[in-house]
Length: 520
Image (cartoon, rainbow, N blue to C red; front, side):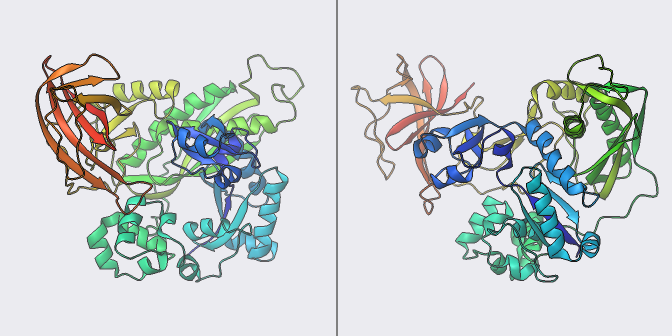
């Protein structure tokens, strides 16, 4: 088991948008809190809350949209501070990086000395952080998150260190929820279960989670470096003076890299990106991604490296002779002479993206078009629907960005109370308010035993005139997560056809009627 040092910067998405840690602030994605400061958490704000709920608990909450580009660019400052002490810094994600601890610890006089030096270097760079050392990345990350700013877990002590932690730290809410109902509430209890039974009951993802709980590596050791050189390189003659030129080349090189890996049935979870400048300076970063780094994702990381390096130059936009370069703020001091991408850690490839419109494979033309749209709109600018489990219509499809692998661990049911086929054709992002009345104009009420006060005769939407009900069926009662008051849901669903030929999926919850979906 390798000794790993992890540097963790708390609430990094909030830091990246310029919100101070002492300010009650949060960043949001699609109307929900993605991260918040400690001051906001003290007021009751939590990740995953709707903005309205968060502002009700904290009226002075400062809200910002999440900026993933800013997160990557700013984190380069932290990586540079760590790289000044030891090379080969591995960026797990913006806000979290890691290094192999064994060699640097011997050089700096021990693991605790190394941990303190790295932590001090990041703090001097202007960022709060925690630093921890343990066997493996998972345990080291939790060691960095301790209240005293991090700790060193003795070699061989990862399992004991992890044992008291709740299952939520695994990042698998569905698995944690199911295990809690089975009486398994800590990593230590989960780790003690027989491995064969866990794999048989929870599948490959459950077995991987148990390995993490035991302080073991999440996967078998990766194969060694391939005999065939899989790195790709591009030379710029004359040197590229604009960042966009380098980013464009990075996307092309990423495509060549994927072709080489695919021919060998491999993918890489660590990618080394090297940028060589005309003045002889070489900027190297190692990026980790447990899956497939798409061409756009690789290009984004190259852009982050260039942005961070350019901001560190004393006179950006000026060449070696002090003459101002032509061009805009994207100008790179000295020019980029070459770019190289090297897969640093190879693992067997377990899947590939399926086609967008039913073909057996994605054509180059479709892939290029998808890349262009993503470059304009962002990584999630173009997605493809993946059928998943769930009862409600909004729970049965997950949108995955083009270029990403299909997420594992998709539950396959059974789903008591699931709406019958056919599936609705249109599902709004949020349920719309409706009014359902009987023949006398009295609102229809559904009791706790799913007994209706009268058959529905008229339905209207958002206070409009609505239409008469020609036929209907239901109810299908749903009582989900009754053991969790914060997430519980109790509702009954109906299918309704109006006299003008339209069909809807209605639901009643807490005495309120809602439109969940519409049929063609």
